[in-house]
Image 1 (cartoon, rainbow, N blue to C red):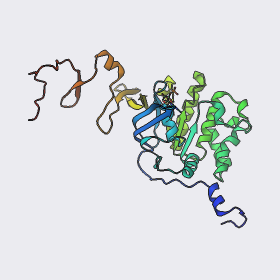
Image 2 (tube, rainbow, N blue to C red; image 1 turned 90 degrees about the vertical axis):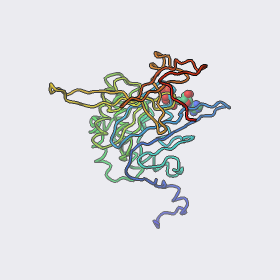
Image 3 (cartoon, rainbow, N blue to C red; image 1 turned 30 degrees about the horizontal axis):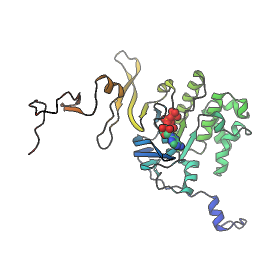
Image 4 (cartoon, rainbow, N blue to C red; image 1 turned 120 degrees about the vertical axis):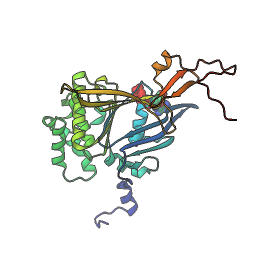
Length: 326
Ligand SMILES: Nc1ncnc2c1ncn2[C@@H]1O[C@H](COP(=O)(O)OP(=O)(O)OP(=O)(O)O)[C@@H](O)[C@H]1O
């Protein structure tokens, strides 16, 4: 113990966060059957209803979905601000359900970075951009601060803003400084909740591109909640949440055609959980009149889904019917 430290051992311990236990290897975000139920005045809202999500290290993923579908609830849990009601969740090898309150501080300082929608919420107004970026490193006693501040501001394209306060920056510049601040302590995962929600199209484009390229350069995994339709140009993978569950995903791949021209091919997938459950797109359900139950037919390499148009009141000799085991 430091002899100049006059605090009692207990107080000294309380000041330093307890390090989180990290298992290395595996995905950077892993959620299984995640449930979050809010209870207010006797009314229960099931914000997450068994959500599954796996994000590999270095991936940049956009999370989209209608208002109230559970996006912010998920981000709240992944950032360590909230606890799930059930299920399991790991971020960068940290088990979020067994993490203690003291470990949460270490988790939020070193494992995850966070950017909020409101530009004013991300930065301290009385500090310059450079001092805002340096602050998390001061708190965690990092010594290479000046070099790191320069590197991050440069990476986010706001090196010329270093000596300005947030009020002297545009909304887009503020968000880029906010991303630099969130990346200061080299988190494994960057979480962003509508980071372009208050910006116009041009500034949104610049912020998303700066975030993507900085994450690629630093190897940071990114999960960004957005309503911004242009986000698809900046991410390889878009995950859609519907009613508290991941429902569909769009994966984009760059392919070179026979004409030698490179293009992006996007393909939409429906998410299947461990139990084999899938959620059919609402439009398919509506257009095909699917309800109550559907009939599945397995082909050699795919499964067909048919509306139930049988009369169940009578025995049937329909060839598609399956004879019950006796
Ligand atoms: N603290 C809370 N107490 C009670 N219900 C809540 C609370 N926070 C969220 N909810 C409810 O949980 C559901 C999911 O909310 P959430 O904020 O996660 O959705 P969202 O997809 O982020 O929506 P938006 O796009 O509008 O921000 C909604 O029905 C919401 O009303």
